[in-house]
Image (cartoon, rainbow, N blue to C red):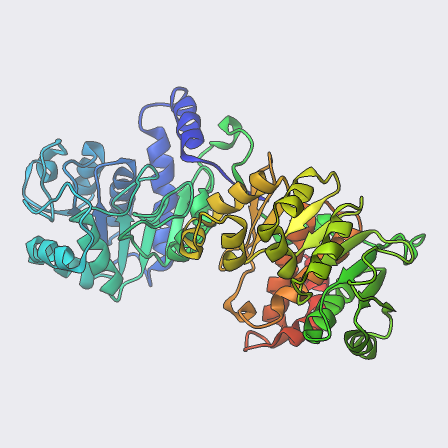
Amino acid sequence: MLSAHAVSVVREAEQALMDRLPEGALMRRAATGLAVHCARMLPRVYGSRVTLMVGGGDNGGDALFAGADLAARGAFVRAVLAGKRAHPGGLAALRAAGGRVIGDGPAAAAGSSTPSGAAGEARATENSGSAENREVHRARISEEAESALFDTDLIVDGLLGIGGRGGLREPFAALAALASNSPAPVVAVDLPSGVDADTGVVAGSAVRADATVTFGTYKPGLFVDPGAERAGRVHFVDIGLAPELPGATLLRPQAVDIARLLPTPSAEDDKYRRGVLAVRAGSDRYRGAAVLCVGGALRTGAGMVRYGGGEEVLAQVIARWPETVGVHLDPASGTGLGPGRVSAVVVGSGRGTDPADADELRALLESDVPALLDADALTLVAESASLADLVRRRRAHTLLTPHAGEMSRLLPDTDRAEIEAHRLEQAERAAGLYRSTVLLKGSTTVIAHPGAPAVVNPTGTPLLATAGSGDVLSGAAGALLAAGLSAQDAGTCAAYLHGRAAVLARDGAPISASDLLDALPLAVAEVLSA
Protein backbone atom coordinates (compact mmCIF):
# COMPACT_ATOMS: atom_id res chain seq x y z
CA MET A 1 0.00 0.00 0.00
CA LEU A 2 1.15 3.52 -0.76
CA SER A 3 0.92 5.56 2.44
CA ALA A 4 -0.08 9.21 2.73
CA HIS A 5 0.31 11.35 5.83
CA ALA A 6 -1.31 14.52 7.11
CA VAL A 7 0.61 17.80 7.01
CA SER A 8 0.99 18.00 10.80
CA VAL A 9 2.57 14.55 10.84
CA VAL A 10 4.90 15.41 7.96
CA ARG A 11 6.03 18.59 9.70
CA GLU A 12 6.93 16.75 12.89
CA ALA A 13 8.79 14.04 10.99
CA GLU A 14 10.72 16.59 8.92
CA GLN A 15 11.76 18.49 12.04
CA ALA A 16 12.94 15.31 13.75
CA LEU A 17 15.05 14.43 10.71
CA MET A 18 16.42 17.95 10.23
CA ASP A 19 17.58 17.99 13.85
CA ARG A 20 20.01 15.18 12.97
CA LEU A 21 21.18 16.48 9.58
CA PRO A 22 23.43 19.36 8.53
CA GLU A 23 21.52 22.56 7.83
CA GLY A 24 19.89 22.53 4.41
CA ALA A 25 20.57 18.83 3.76
CA LEU A 26 16.90 17.86 3.61
CA MET A 27 16.07 20.58 1.09
CA ARG A 28 19.01 19.55 -1.07
CA ARG A 29 17.81 15.95 -1.09
CA ALA A 30 14.37 17.08 -2.24
CA ALA A 31 15.79 19.47 -4.83
CA THR A 32 18.06 16.82 -6.30
CA GLY A 33 15.13 14.45 -6.75
CA LEU A 34 13.06 17.24 -8.26
CA ALA A 35 15.83 18.10 -10.72
CA VAL A 36 16.06 14.46 -11.82
CA HIS A 37 12.35 14.30 -12.65
CA CYS A 38 12.41 17.71 -14.36
CA ALA A 39 15.27 16.49 -16.56
CA ARG A 40 13.17 13.47 -17.56
CA MET A 41 10.35 15.76 -18.67
CA LEU A 42 12.63 17.78 -20.93
CA PRO A 43 13.61 16.74 -24.46
CA ARG A 44 17.16 17.34 -23.27
CA VAL A 45 18.62 19.40 -20.44
CA TYR A 46 21.35 21.31 -22.28
CA GLY A 47 19.81 24.25 -24.09
CA SER A 48 16.30 23.70 -22.71
CA ARG A 49 14.30 26.51 -21.15
CA VAL A 50 12.92 26.10 -17.64
CA THR A 51 10.74 28.62 -15.80
CA LEU A 52 10.33 28.45 -12.02
CA MET A 53 7.30 29.98 -10.27
CA VAL A 54 8.71 30.68 -6.83
CA GLY A 55 6.94 31.53 -3.60
CA GLY A 56 8.48 32.27 -0.24
CA GLY A 57 8.24 28.83 1.38
CA ASP A 58 10.33 25.68 1.31
CA ASN A 59 8.76 24.56 -1.97
CA GLY A 60 10.11 27.73 -3.55
CA GLY A 61 13.53 26.84 -2.14
CA ASP A 62 13.26 23.33 -3.58
CA ALA A 63 12.44 24.82 -6.98
CA LEU A 64 15.38 27.26 -6.83
CA PHE A 65 17.93 24.59 -5.89
CA ALA A 66 16.56 22.23 -8.56
CA GLY A 67 16.77 25.07 -11.05
CA ALA A 68 20.39 25.61 -10.05
CA ASP A 69 21.13 21.94 -10.77
CA LEU A 70 19.53 22.20 -14.21
CA ALA A 71 21.30 25.49 -14.98
CA ALA A 72 24.64 23.88 -14.09
CA ARG A 73 23.86 21.26 -16.76
CA GLY A 74 23.30 23.87 -19.42
CA ALA A 75 19.59 24.68 -19.14
CA PHE A 76 18.40 28.29 -19.42
CA VAL A 77 16.57 28.75 -16.11
CA ARG A 78 14.45 31.74 -15.10
CA ALA A 79 12.83 32.21 -11.70
CA VAL A 80 9.64 34.26 -11.48
CA LEU A 81 9.45 35.47 -7.88
CA ALA A 82 5.84 35.80 -6.75
CA GLY A 83 6.01 36.18 -2.98
CA LYS A 84 7.19 38.74 -0.48
CA ARG A 85 10.39 36.80 0.02
CA ALA A 86 12.37 33.98 -1.50
CA HIS A 87 14.80 31.41 -0.13
CA PRO A 88 18.16 33.27 -0.02
CA GLY A 89 20.32 30.17 -0.37
CA GLY A 90 18.28 28.96 -3.33
CA LEU A 91 18.50 32.35 -5.03
CA ALA A 92 22.25 32.46 -4.52
CA ALA A 93 22.66 28.92 -5.88
CA LEU A 94 20.56 29.70 -8.96
CA ARG A 95 22.51 32.85 -9.74
CA ALA A 96 25.84 31.11 -9.19
CA ALA A 97 24.82 28.44 -11.73
CA GLY A 98 23.91 31.06 -14.32
CA GLY A 99 20.16 31.17 -13.77
CA ARG A 100 18.21 34.38 -14.10
CA VAL A 101 15.87 35.96 -11.55
CA ILE A 102 12.95 37.98 -12.91
CA GLY A 103 12.17 40.92 -10.63
CA ASP A 104 14.05 43.89 -9.30
CA GLY A 105 12.85 44.25 -5.71
CA PRO A 106 14.55 43.26 -2.44
CA ALA A 107 13.46 39.61 -2.66
CA ALA A 108 15.09 39.26 -6.05
CA ALA A 109 18.20 40.94 -4.69
CA ALA A 110 18.64 39.09 -1.42
CA GLY A 111 15.63 37.01 -0.52
CA SER A 112 14.44 39.46 2.12
CA SER A 113 10.90 39.69 3.44
CA THR A 114 10.21 42.82 1.39
CA PRO A 115 7.65 42.24 -1.41
CA SER A 116 9.04 41.95 -4.90
CA GLY A 117 9.29 39.67 -7.93
CA ALA A 118 7.27 39.14 -11.03
CA ALA A 119 4.22 40.71 -9.48
CA GLY A 120 6.13 43.89 -8.64
CA GLU A 121 3.78 46.00 -6.56
CA ALA A 122 0.76 43.98 -7.63
CA ARG A 123 0.06 41.66 -4.75
CA ALA A 124 -3.19 41.23 -2.87
CA THR A 125 -3.81 39.99 0.64
CA GLU A 126 -7.39 38.89 -0.02
CA ASN A 127 -8.35 35.67 -1.78
CA SER A 128 -9.44 37.34 -5.02
CA GLY A 129 -9.73 34.54 -7.53
CA SER A 130 -12.41 36.04 -9.79
CA ALA A 131 -11.78 36.38 -13.51
CA GLU A 132 -11.85 40.16 -13.16
CA ASN A 133 -9.24 40.15 -10.42
CA ARG A 134 -7.07 37.69 -12.32
CA GLU A 135 -7.11 40.03 -15.31
CA VAL A 136 -6.11 42.97 -13.10
CA HIS A 137 -3.21 41.10 -11.58
CA ARG A 138 -2.20 39.62 -14.90
CA ALA A 139 -1.90 43.15 -16.22
CA ARG A 140 0.45 43.96 -13.34
CA ILE A 141 2.66 40.92 -13.86
CA SER A 142 5.69 42.00 -15.81
CA GLU A 143 5.83 41.26 -19.50
CA GLU A 144 9.13 39.51 -18.91
CA ALA A 145 7.52 37.12 -16.42
CA GLU A 146 4.57 36.41 -18.71
CA SER A 147 6.93 35.78 -21.62
CA ALA A 148 8.98 33.39 -19.49
CA LEU A 149 5.89 31.28 -18.80
CA PHE A 150 5.04 30.95 -22.49
CA ASP A 151 8.50 30.82 -24.02
CA THR A 152 9.68 27.77 -22.09
CA ASP A 153 9.97 23.99 -22.25
CA LEU A 154 8.96 23.33 -18.64
CA ILE A 155 7.24 25.22 -15.81
CA VAL A 156 8.04 24.32 -12.20
CA ASP A 157 5.35 25.22 -9.66
CA GLY A 158 6.99 26.20 -6.37
CA LEU A 159 4.44 28.83 -5.36
CA LEU A 160 3.02 27.27 -2.20
CA GLY A 161 3.90 24.38 0.08
CA ILE A 162 1.80 21.72 1.76
CA GLY A 163 0.58 24.20 4.36
CA GLY A 164 -1.39 26.27 1.84
CA ARG A 165 -5.13 26.55 2.46
CA GLY A 166 -8.11 28.09 0.72
CA GLY A 167 -7.01 28.39 -2.90
CA LEU A 168 -4.46 30.76 -4.37
CA ARG A 169 -4.34 34.46 -3.59
CA GLU A 170 -3.13 37.02 -6.07
CA PRO A 171 -0.73 37.27 -7.80
CA PHE A 172 -0.31 33.50 -7.42
CA ALA A 173 -3.74 32.85 -8.99
CA ALA A 174 -2.84 34.91 -12.05
CA LEU A 175 0.44 33.01 -12.44
CA ALA A 176 -1.41 29.69 -12.14
CA ALA A 177 -3.80 30.80 -14.88
CA LEU A 178 -0.90 31.78 -17.12
CA ALA A 179 0.78 28.42 -16.51
CA SER A 180 -2.45 26.60 -17.40
CA ASN A 181 -2.62 28.45 -20.71
CA SER A 182 1.04 27.87 -21.52
CA PRO A 183 1.90 25.11 -24.00
CA ALA A 184 4.68 23.94 -21.68
CA PRO A 185 4.14 21.03 -19.25
CA VAL A 186 3.91 21.90 -15.56
CA VAL A 187 5.60 19.97 -12.76
CA ALA A 188 4.45 20.73 -9.21
CA VAL A 189 6.79 20.69 -6.23
CA ASP A 190 5.38 18.31 -3.57
CA LEU A 191 1.76 19.35 -4.30
CA PRO A 192 0.06 21.58 -6.88
CA SER A 193 -0.27 25.04 -5.36
CA GLY A 194 -3.85 25.68 -4.28
CA VAL A 195 -4.69 22.05 -3.46
CA ASP A 196 -5.33 21.22 0.20
CA ALA A 197 -2.68 18.64 1.09
CA ASP A 198 -4.80 16.88 3.72
CA THR A 199 -8.07 16.56 1.82
CA GLY A 200 -7.60 17.23 -1.89
CA VAL A 201 -10.06 20.12 -1.67
CA VAL A 202 -9.61 22.91 -4.23
CA ALA A 203 -11.28 25.98 -2.71
CA GLY A 204 -10.41 28.44 -5.47
CA SER A 205 -7.70 28.92 -8.05
CA ALA A 206 -5.05 26.19 -8.19
CA VAL A 207 -2.24 25.01 -10.40
CA ARG A 208 -3.04 22.18 -12.79
CA ALA A 209 0.10 20.06 -13.10
CA ASP A 210 1.08 17.42 -15.63
CA ALA A 211 3.27 15.81 -12.99
CA THR A 212 3.93 16.23 -9.28
CA VAL A 213 7.17 15.35 -7.50
CA THR A 214 6.41 14.70 -3.83
CA PHE A 215 8.92 14.18 -1.02
CA GLY A 216 9.21 11.85 1.97
CA THR A 217 5.64 10.55 1.88
CA TYR A 218 2.56 10.96 -0.24
CA LYS A 219 0.05 13.62 0.75
CA PRO A 220 -3.67 12.69 0.95
CA GLY A 221 -4.56 15.50 -1.44
CA LEU A 222 -2.57 13.76 -4.18
CA PHE A 223 -4.86 10.73 -3.98
CA VAL A 224 -8.31 12.31 -3.64
CA ASP A 225 -10.20 14.37 -6.22
CA PRO A 226 -10.43 17.17 -7.06
CA GLY A 227 -6.81 17.58 -5.94
CA ALA A 228 -5.68 14.28 -7.47
CA GLU A 229 -7.02 15.32 -10.85
CA ARG A 230 -4.80 18.43 -10.72
CA ALA A 231 -1.67 16.53 -9.69
CA GLY A 232 -1.10 14.62 -12.92
CA ARG A 233 1.36 11.75 -12.68
CA VAL A 234 2.82 11.60 -9.17
CA HIS A 235 6.52 10.77 -8.64
CA PHE A 236 7.85 9.94 -5.17
CA VAL A 237 11.28 11.02 -3.92
CA ASP A 238 12.64 9.29 -0.84
CA ILE A 239 14.38 11.84 1.40
CA GLY A 240 14.82 9.52 4.39
CA LEU A 241 11.61 10.47 6.20
CA ALA A 242 10.12 6.97 6.60
CA PRO A 243 11.73 6.12 10.00
CA GLU A 244 10.19 9.25 11.48
CA LEU A 245 6.65 8.61 10.23
CA PRO A 246 3.84 6.92 12.22
CA GLY A 247 0.99 4.94 10.66
CA ALA A 248 -0.58 6.28 7.50
CA THR A 249 -3.46 8.74 7.35
CA LEU A 250 -4.59 7.34 4.00
CA LEU A 251 -3.74 4.26 1.94
CA ARG A 252 -3.73 3.59 -1.78
CA PRO A 253 -3.42 -0.06 -2.89
CA GLN A 254 -1.30 -1.40 -5.71
CA ALA A 255 -1.92 -4.60 -7.65
CA VAL A 256 0.32 -6.62 -5.37
CA ASP A 257 -1.72 -5.50 -2.34
CA ILE A 258 -4.95 -6.64 -3.97
CA ALA A 259 -3.33 -9.98 -4.86
CA ARG A 260 -2.44 -10.54 -1.19
CA LEU A 261 -5.99 -9.78 -0.09
CA LEU A 262 -7.87 -11.84 -2.68
CA PRO A 263 -8.99 -15.28 -1.50
CA THR A 264 -7.35 -18.07 -3.47
CA PRO A 265 -9.10 -21.46 -3.59
CA SER A 266 -7.20 -24.44 -2.21
CA ALA A 267 -7.50 -28.09 -3.11
CA GLU A 268 -9.71 -28.68 -0.05
CA ASP A 269 -12.19 -25.91 -0.86
CA ASP A 270 -15.72 -26.55 -1.95
CA LYS A 271 -18.48 -24.15 -2.96
CA TYR A 272 -19.46 -23.54 0.66
CA ARG A 273 -15.94 -22.74 1.82
CA ARG A 274 -15.55 -20.29 -1.07
CA GLY A 275 -18.59 -18.42 0.19
CA VAL A 276 -22.33 -18.46 -0.38
CA LEU A 277 -23.80 -15.06 -1.22
CA ALA A 278 -27.48 -14.25 -0.87
CA VAL A 279 -28.59 -11.58 -3.35
CA ARG A 280 -31.67 -9.54 -2.63
CA ALA A 281 -31.39 -7.14 -5.55
CA GLY A 282 -33.61 -6.35 -8.49
CA SER A 283 -37.34 -6.73 -8.88
CA ASP A 284 -39.84 -7.53 -11.59
CA ARG A 285 -39.65 -3.84 -12.50
CA TYR A 286 -35.83 -3.62 -12.43
CA ARG A 287 -34.65 -7.03 -13.60
CA GLY A 288 -31.28 -5.87 -14.95
CA ALA A 289 -30.03 -4.91 -11.50
CA ALA A 290 -30.43 -8.51 -10.35
CA VAL A 291 -28.76 -9.98 -13.44
CA LEU A 292 -25.78 -7.64 -13.14
CA CYS A 293 -25.36 -8.07 -9.38
CA VAL A 294 -25.49 -11.86 -9.56
CA GLY A 295 -23.07 -11.81 -12.50
CA GLY A 296 -20.64 -9.58 -10.63
CA ALA A 297 -20.62 -12.04 -7.73
CA LEU A 298 -20.15 -15.14 -9.87
CA ARG A 299 -17.40 -13.60 -11.99
CA THR A 300 -15.50 -12.50 -8.87
CA GLY A 301 -15.38 -16.04 -7.51
CA ALA A 302 -18.42 -16.65 -5.31
CA GLY A 303 -18.77 -20.33 -4.48
CA MET A 304 -22.55 -20.08 -4.79
CA VAL A 305 -25.14 -17.37 -5.27
CA ARG A 306 -28.60 -17.80 -3.78
CA TYR A 307 -31.00 -15.38 -5.42
CA GLY A 308 -34.43 -14.50 -4.09
CA GLY A 309 -36.86 -12.34 -6.00
CA GLY A 310 -40.08 -12.02 -7.95
CA GLU A 311 -41.12 -14.62 -10.47
CA GLU A 312 -40.20 -12.65 -13.60
CA VAL A 313 -36.83 -11.38 -12.39
CA LEU A 314 -35.97 -14.81 -11.02
CA ALA A 315 -36.59 -16.36 -14.44
CA GLN A 316 -34.33 -13.81 -16.09
CA VAL A 317 -31.54 -14.36 -13.56
CA ILE A 318 -31.68 -18.15 -14.04
CA ALA A 319 -31.77 -17.77 -17.82
CA ARG A 320 -28.58 -15.67 -17.75
CA TRP A 321 -26.86 -17.45 -14.86
CA PRO A 322 -28.14 -21.05 -14.65
CA GLU A 323 -25.63 -21.85 -11.90
CA THR A 324 -27.61 -19.59 -9.54
CA VAL A 325 -29.70 -21.24 -6.84
CA GLY A 326 -32.93 -19.29 -7.10
CA VAL A 327 -36.08 -19.09 -5.05
CA HIS A 328 -39.29 -17.19 -5.71
CA LEU A 329 -39.36 -14.64 -2.93
CA ASP A 330 -41.90 -11.88 -2.52
CA PRO A 331 -40.69 -9.49 0.21
CA ALA A 332 -44.30 -9.06 1.25
CA SER A 333 -44.52 -12.72 2.27
CA GLY A 334 -40.96 -13.71 3.15
CA THR A 335 -38.05 -11.69 4.48
CA GLY A 336 -35.53 -14.23 5.78
CA LEU A 337 -32.25 -15.40 4.25
CA GLY A 338 -33.25 -19.04 3.97
CA PRO A 339 -33.36 -21.64 2.73
CA GLY A 340 -29.80 -22.88 2.91
CA ARG A 341 -26.45 -21.75 4.25
CA VAL A 342 -25.45 -18.11 3.59
CA SER A 343 -22.12 -16.38 4.22
CA ALA A 344 -23.10 -12.80 3.29
CA VAL A 345 -25.94 -10.85 1.70
CA VAL A 346 -26.23 -8.03 -0.83
CA VAL A 347 -29.42 -5.99 -0.73
CA GLY A 348 -30.86 -2.93 -2.40
CA SER A 349 -29.96 -2.54 -6.08
CA GLY A 350 -33.26 -2.09 -7.93
CA ARG A 351 -35.14 -3.72 -5.03
CA GLY A 352 -37.62 -0.97 -4.22
CA THR A 353 -38.55 1.22 -1.26
CA ASP A 354 -42.02 -0.07 -0.42
CA PRO A 355 -42.90 -1.03 3.18
CA ALA A 356 -42.37 -4.68 2.28
CA ASP A 357 -38.84 -3.86 1.09
CA ALA A 358 -38.20 -2.07 4.39
CA ASP A 359 -39.36 -5.19 6.25
CA GLU A 360 -37.02 -7.35 4.19
CA LEU A 361 -34.10 -5.01 4.91
CA ARG A 362 -34.93 -5.02 8.61
CA ALA A 363 -34.82 -8.82 8.72
CA LEU A 364 -31.48 -8.89 6.93
CA LEU A 365 -29.99 -6.28 9.25
CA GLU A 366 -31.14 -8.29 12.25
CA SER A 367 -29.22 -11.33 10.97
CA ASP A 368 -25.64 -12.02 11.98
CA VAL A 369 -24.19 -12.31 8.44
CA PRO A 370 -22.04 -9.68 6.72
CA ALA A 371 -24.18 -7.37 4.60
CA LEU A 372 -23.72 -4.94 1.73
CA LEU A 373 -26.32 -2.19 1.37
CA ASP A 374 -26.69 -0.36 -1.94
CA ALA A 375 -29.13 1.91 -3.76
CA ASP A 376 -32.71 1.43 -2.47
CA ALA A 377 -31.47 -0.09 0.78
CA LEU A 378 -29.51 3.10 1.46
CA THR A 379 -32.60 5.20 0.74
CA LEU A 380 -34.59 3.15 3.24
CA VAL A 381 -31.89 3.57 5.87
CA ALA A 382 -31.79 7.31 5.26
CA GLU A 383 -35.56 7.55 5.68
CA SER A 384 -35.89 5.36 8.78
CA ALA A 385 -34.26 6.12 12.13
CA SER A 386 -34.93 2.55 13.29
CA LEU A 387 -33.19 1.01 10.27
CA ALA A 388 -30.27 3.41 10.68
CA ASP A 389 -30.00 2.35 14.31
CA LEU A 390 -29.97 -1.31 13.27
CA VAL A 391 -27.03 -0.56 10.95
CA ARG A 392 -25.14 1.11 13.81
CA ARG A 393 -25.76 -1.80 16.21
CA ARG A 394 -24.67 -4.57 13.85
CA ARG A 395 -21.68 -6.63 14.91
CA ALA A 396 -21.25 -8.34 11.54
CA HIS A 397 -19.30 -6.59 8.78
CA THR A 398 -21.49 -4.01 7.07
CA LEU A 399 -20.59 -2.22 3.84
CA LEU A 400 -22.54 0.78 2.54
CA THR A 401 -21.88 1.68 -1.11
CA PRO A 402 -23.42 5.09 -1.89
CA HIS A 403 -22.69 7.47 -4.72
CA ALA A 404 -22.67 11.17 -3.86
CA GLY A 405 -26.42 11.58 -4.30
CA GLU A 406 -27.20 8.66 -1.99
CA MET A 407 -24.61 9.93 0.48
CA SER A 408 -26.42 13.26 0.61
CA ARG A 409 -29.48 11.35 1.82
CA LEU A 410 -27.47 9.47 4.43
CA LEU A 411 -26.02 12.82 5.55
CA PRO A 412 -29.15 14.98 5.22
CA ASP A 413 -27.44 18.24 6.15
CA THR A 414 -24.92 17.90 3.30
CA ASP A 415 -25.63 18.41 -0.38
CA ARG A 416 -24.12 16.49 -3.28
CA ALA A 417 -21.72 19.27 -4.28
CA GLU A 418 -20.27 19.39 -0.76
CA ILE A 419 -19.73 15.63 -0.78
CA GLU A 420 -18.01 15.68 -4.17
CA ALA A 421 -15.76 18.56 -3.10
CA HIS A 422 -14.84 16.93 0.25
CA ARG A 423 -14.93 13.23 -0.59
CA LEU A 424 -12.49 11.99 2.03
CA GLU A 425 -13.97 14.01 4.88
CA GLN A 426 -17.56 13.02 4.08
CA ALA A 427 -16.78 9.31 3.63
CA GLU A 428 -15.03 9.22 7.01
CA ARG A 429 -17.88 11.16 8.57
CA ALA A 430 -20.50 8.71 7.28
CA ALA A 431 -18.43 5.73 8.43
CA GLY A 432 -18.34 7.17 11.94
CA LEU A 433 -22.02 8.08 11.94
CA TYR A 434 -23.22 4.62 10.84
CA ARG A 435 -20.38 2.66 12.51
CA SER A 436 -19.90 0.79 9.26
CA THR A 437 -17.57 0.68 6.30
CA VAL A 438 -18.55 3.21 3.65
CA LEU A 439 -17.51 2.90 0.01
CA LEU A 440 -18.19 6.29 -1.54
CA LYS A 441 -18.33 5.83 -5.32
CA GLY A 442 -17.23 8.51 -7.74
CA SER A 443 -14.24 10.05 -9.47
CA THR A 444 -12.19 8.96 -6.47
CA THR A 445 -13.71 5.98 -4.70
CA VAL A 446 -13.01 6.22 -0.97
CA ILE A 447 -13.41 3.25 1.38
CA ALA A 448 -13.65 4.50 4.97
CA HIS A 449 -13.90 2.46 8.16
CA PRO A 450 -14.19 3.78 11.73
CA GLY A 451 -10.82 3.94 13.48
CA ALA A 452 -8.79 2.86 10.43
CA PRO A 453 -6.99 4.77 7.66
CA ALA A 454 -9.25 5.35 4.69
CA VAL A 455 -8.37 3.66 1.41
CA VAL A 456 -8.61 5.33 -2.00
CA ASN A 457 -8.97 3.33 -5.19
CA PRO A 458 -6.43 4.11 -7.94
CA THR A 459 -8.23 2.39 -10.84
CA GLY A 460 -11.25 4.66 -11.16
CA THR A 461 -12.15 5.61 -14.71
CA PRO A 462 -14.90 7.64 -16.42
CA LEU A 463 -15.71 4.45 -18.35
CA LEU A 464 -17.62 3.32 -15.25
CA ALA A 465 -20.07 6.22 -15.51
CA THR A 466 -22.69 3.99 -17.10
CA ALA A 467 -25.99 2.55 -15.90
CA GLY A 468 -25.64 -0.71 -13.99
CA SER A 469 -21.93 -0.56 -13.22
CA GLY A 470 -22.70 -0.07 -9.53
CA ASP A 471 -24.79 -3.26 -9.52
CA VAL A 472 -21.79 -5.21 -10.79
CA LEU A 473 -19.61 -3.64 -8.09
CA SER A 474 -22.09 -4.66 -5.40
CA GLY A 475 -22.04 -8.26 -6.57
CA ALA A 476 -18.25 -8.34 -6.70
CA ALA A 477 -17.88 -6.87 -3.21
CA GLY A 478 -20.58 -9.19 -1.89
CA ALA A 479 -18.71 -12.24 -3.21
CA LEU A 480 -15.58 -11.12 -1.37
CA LEU A 481 -17.56 -10.52 1.82
CA ALA A 482 -18.94 -14.04 1.52
CA ALA A 483 -15.39 -15.37 1.07
CA GLY A 484 -14.46 -13.97 4.48
CA LEU A 485 -12.85 -10.60 3.72
CA SER A 486 -13.59 -7.69 6.02
CA ALA A 487 -15.93 -5.02 4.71
CA GLN A 488 -13.06 -2.61 4.02
CA ASP A 489 -10.91 -5.22 2.30
CA ALA A 490 -13.87 -6.47 0.25
CA GLY A 491 -14.68 -2.93 -0.85
CA THR A 492 -11.03 -2.17 -1.60
CA CYS A 493 -10.53 -5.27 -3.75
CA ALA A 494 -13.87 -4.96 -5.54
CA ALA A 495 -13.31 -1.31 -6.44
CA TYR A 496 -9.82 -2.05 -7.76
CA LEU A 497 -10.99 -5.00 -9.90
CA HIS A 498 -14.05 -3.07 -11.08
CA GLY A 499 -11.87 -0.23 -12.39
CA ARG A 500 -9.41 -2.54 -14.12
CA ALA A 501 -12.26 -4.52 -15.67
CA ALA A 502 -13.64 -1.33 -17.20
CA VAL A 503 -10.35 -0.70 -19.01
CA LEU A 504 -9.72 -4.32 -19.98
CA ALA A 505 -13.23 -4.92 -21.29
CA ARG A 506 -12.73 -3.08 -24.57
CA ASP A 507 -9.15 -1.80 -24.40
CA GLY A 508 -10.27 1.56 -23.05
CA ALA A 509 -13.16 2.08 -25.46
CA PRO A 510 -16.66 2.86 -24.11
CA ILE A 511 -18.38 0.00 -22.32
CA SER A 512 -21.73 -1.02 -20.92
CA ALA A 513 -22.14 -2.58 -17.48
CA SER A 514 -22.59 -6.00 -19.07
CA ASP A 515 -19.09 -5.77 -20.54
CA LEU A 516 -17.69 -5.72 -17.00
CA LEU A 517 -18.91 -9.24 -16.36
CA ASP A 518 -16.58 -10.85 -18.89
CA ALA A 519 -13.72 -8.53 -17.92
CA LEU A 520 -13.77 -9.17 -14.16
CA PRO A 521 -11.94 -12.53 -14.51
CA LEU A 522 -9.36 -10.76 -16.67
CA ALA A 523 -8.84 -8.19 -13.93
CA VAL A 524 -8.44 -10.92 -11.31
CA ALA A 525 -5.91 -12.73 -13.49
CA GLU A 526 -3.97 -9.50 -14.07
CA VAL A 527 -3.77 -8.79 -10.36
CA LEU A 528 -2.69 -12.31 -9.44
CA SER A 529 0.11 -12.16 -12.00
CA ALA A 530 1.47 -8.86 -10.64
